[in-house]
Amino acid sequence: MSGDTYDLIVIGGGINGAGIARDAVGRGLSVLLVEADDLASHTSSSSTKLIHGGLRYLEQYEFKLVAKALSEREVLLKMAPHIIWPMRFVLPHQKHLRPAWMIRTGLFLYDHLGGKQTLANSHGIKFSGHPAGAPLKAAFTKGFVYSDAWVQDARLVVLNCMDAADRGARIMTRTRAETATRSSDGWQVTLKTCDGETSEVRARGLVNAAGPWAVRFLDDIASQNHPYALRLIKGSHIVVERLFAHDYAYIFQQPDGRIVFAIPERDFTLIGTTDVEHQGAPGKVAIDADEIAYLCEAINRYFERPIGPEDVVWSYSGVRPLLDDHEDNASEITRDYRIQLDTAGGAPLLNVFGGKLTTYRRLAEDAVDQLAPALGHREKAWTHSGHPLPGGDDANPQQLVASLQSRYPFVPSPMATRLVFNYGTRALTILGQAERLDDLGEHFGADLYAAAEVDYLRAHEWARTAEDILWRRTKLVLRLDDSEQRRLADYLAASAANTEEEKA
Ligand SMILES: Cc1cc2nc3c(=O)[nH]c(=O)nc-3n(C[C@H](O)[C@H](O)[C@H](O)COP(=O)(O)OP(=O)(O)OC[C@H]3O[C@@H](n4cnc5c(N)ncnc54)[C@H](O)[C@@H]3O)c2cc1C
Picture 1 (tube, rainbow, N blue to C red):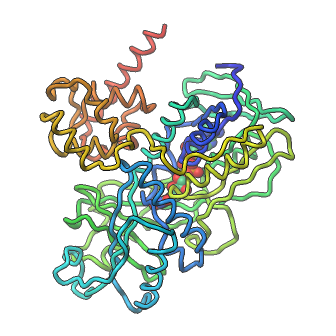
Picture 2 (cartoon, rainbow, N blue to C red; picture 1 turned 45 degrees about the vertical axis):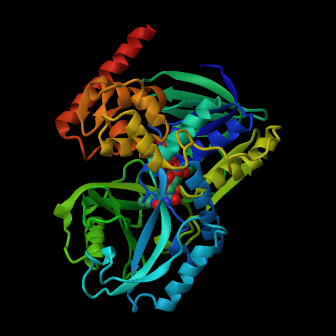
Picture 3 (cartoon, protein in one colour; picture 1 turned 60 degrees about the vertical axis):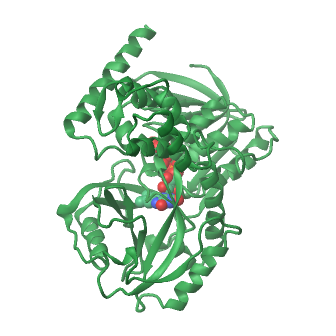
């Protein structure tokens, strides 16, 4: 490893680093991506998980951002139909918050700004007799329905890295860039793994996709002068037992002008988010009591059955790394991204600031469009069509569930569905030659088995710990109890020790 030379080193294995690594290696650049923790362990697994235009950004006149995001929604739905799928959103009408004409106009724009769309258009609804009306207070009699999409956020990152690796990129997780020294012809980067091993690598160009750490990276690791400041805006979500029994999500307008989503996730409802200025270290974020109270109140304004802090079974928080545009109100700071290529100070340095999961592919394309010529590469952008992410090569996951069940009749239906909507066609690789559930290895709880899924995740998706698997790769965290989680952790530790022994 020490002494290896690449065209490009990408710092950060969140969605932006992963997207750039994939795009760059696909254009013929040799690429190393380094991630200090697990892939997607920070902002990119703490999102509301929407691939969306951002209805509320219309009010901030961010038409360009909304149009870009809506057209990306179509591209991403095709690229990864197994981890991104359409969702219908219900907006109960409250005329004192926003008049009906304003919402109708906004939704009309939302249906059309992105160009040709495959998702259903918006329309008005009456709640009486409509499934979405059931959990609402009787005062809400009508509203609107519109389309957006839902994404398995952390898996989007992992699949971009898998595809990048399949195309020749090197992905190193749990490896921090400790120093980055720039000269006229390249970068020398010192890497340190979580086991304390250090190595030196070189590259002709460097991408700073460190998300909330992007400015710290410039200040402390790369020692570069720059004019940038980030605002770190914490957003938290709570998870409660299922509040309604249908597939619609809700978008609830709040008296402070913000919106809060209530999204169905199988037996649970995901509620978020908040917008709170964050001053501490980016890695240390957690929900506070005020945020829990805010989210419960936001729900209690609409649903008949109230919730309180005691109903929260899980919560998570992340920080949005937003470029400081001197806006007072945290929810009004632009969510659009900024990329900046600096070639004046020596070898190329590309900085990424802000952005959304939804626009990551465009961001990556813009970044490599700028960077590749500076490295003498002229290959054209390629990620916009016809190149699905791993497992996304079957456009009809529902049909895939059916064919998986006919090939593996012993797999229970919920498990078949979960595998397909996590791994797409790669679910077949996971099940392999199995003829019965016993062939899938040790059973950890829920429908997680060792020889099938866990070993696959270790071998192909850089998973090392129980948290990597339960929280970011499978979202099974709420379905395994403490002792089952400990057994998984023990299994992973033993497997890692065996691998070390085999290497020695
Ligand atoms: C609460 C919330 C809700 C959101 N909801 C949505 C949504 O619904 N839809 C949407 O489109 N967007 C949403 N977003 C925005 C989206 O999540 C972010 O824009 C995106 O995840 C940012 O990705 P990133 O790669 O820039 O940062 P990150 O995911 O944080 O990745 C940066 C990585 O760099 C690594 N790193 C830092 N320093 C080093 C170093 N020295 N060496 C090696 N690695 C390093 C970090 O460990 C980190 O993993 C939301 C954001 C938040 C916070």
